[in-house]
Length: 303
Ligand SMILES: NCc1[nH]cc(CCC(=O)O)c1CC(=O)O
Image 1: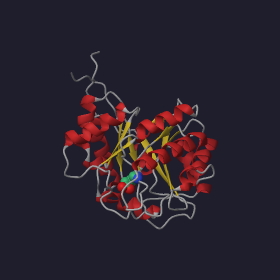
Image 2: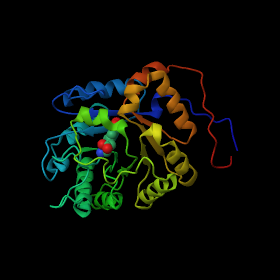
Image 3: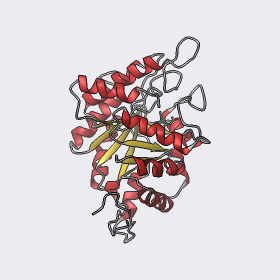
Image 4: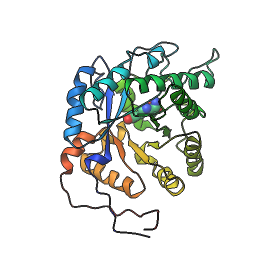
């Protein structure tokens, strides 16, 4: 039944992506920030009305991704910097190895190059705890390896972080990630990434993967790329009662002007998104103002 409840696109419905690299960036198409810029960026996001940031960081790389769980990692320092500036800002992280491994892949590999799923899952769980220790509110396993959400949940619980939430990434392979990879200097050895969903796969299989993540203990789901995964968003909206956050990735934010991104995000809210994660949050928040466009949303529960 349609009611007159509505969700207008507003700054608090946008989660701002913050890409952090210590050297200031590779001149990519999406903005990156250094650690010393984070207090100012956080204050700007707060002033614009945003209540959450999604932090990605890149660090020194090696064969086993040791910097992913280092207490002084770029990620850990970024989380602390945001929290020190604005303790109420919700900090969401990416929990993945691609920014820490020399291969640029999201997984560890055994000698013959095959993914080592057990070792990857253990590394992600350790990284999740390191991010929680630094102050993260929501960690985001993004390697798409079955079992990683459950491992992060139990590692967080054993370390006393039962209040830290988990929002895994449900990822369809796409060329829309190229801008992010350039900006962060990540060149995966294998493309497509072996655990991501194929672009020509079935909606039902993608929805099942999301439901599996929820069964493993996920509290919400990040779905990417937002523009080309609305079938999955709607499918999950019909079957799962958790927050669904489409991720408007680098390629969307660099090719669509703000006015069209605003239309895209209005569509995503209609389709069941609770918030939208985007590189264009600051630009959009500045242009939103008090525009009178309201987006009718159906209510799931009877009133
Ligand atoms: N590690 C997963 C991950 N984390 C961020 C992006 C892309 C985000 C963007 O394009 O904005 C991806 C996809 C990928 O690298 O395959």
